[in-house]
Image (cartoon, rainbow, N blue to C red):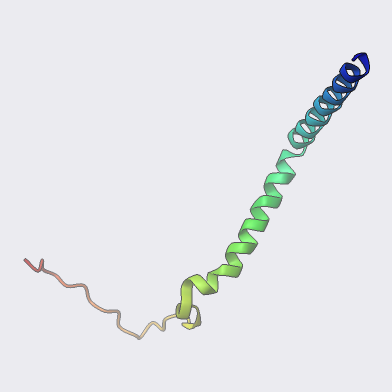
Length: 78
């Protein structure tokens, strides 16, 4: 019986040390972890951007100055 209790206490102690070490590592390196997550999210978003925009990604964004812009209607329809 004593052996079983000692084994459980040892396993619990190792578990607590492991959890404390992991929390300490994350606390010390939280800035670099956040930056890595941001970079990964931005890379994923940039990869999905052409799909999100669809065909609009093929349209050139520079509009010549001599092209007239469409006018906005000036009255309410009701």
